[in-house]
Image (cartoon, rainbow, N blue to C red):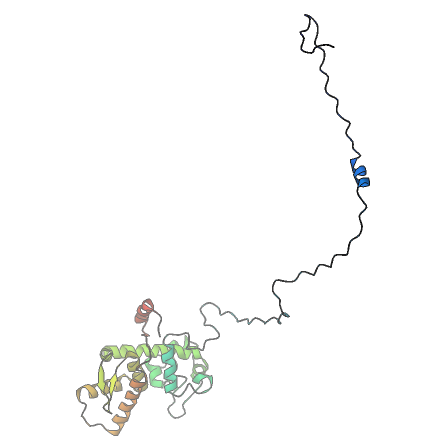
Length: 276
């Protein structure tokens, strides 16, 4: 037996190493494994899986609610849901004036109203003298170019147009403010005087403008002079009736917010917040 560790003679080539012999790989183990296992027997049938349920039980879906489509107003126009005066400055003041004139209770909010006795027109009961004062009528009673710019050429077109009447109201209020300011009447804002009945009246700007709308700036000025300078001076029945009308407006509009309608003052009011 040859010793594998013995030295080889010189010049003798080393014998090639013989790899150990592997056992043949059996590829038929699956059939053998199947023959060795007992045949499968059917077991009891599994219960049917319940159908998947939603996480939240829901009742029948309600019928869809139709969306309310509101027409969008073109640029520069008011929303159709607003009444003509509601998108303007001093909307509350304008409404209270119409209520005081008893025109707000008529159809179309009084825009088509004509007083057969006085000739006063529309929601704010403009007399011809008031329309002349703002330049919408001339001395002969004809409608002017200023009125025509608002689509007004006669009494019928004035009564038919709510925007024109609101424009006339803005012009009239601004005109009354200018007259009251020039005469010093607006300087009385915030002061308190004694009325004809002895009760205190605190003067606000809106109340003074409302009184001027009713009786004119001249009558208002005479009333203030009487109550502050000559309160004991006798009054004629006509004077007393006029002054009582002024007081009614001063008291009725004392709590109504008011912002100036004059263009320069209106711009200043916008910087300080929306008009009331």
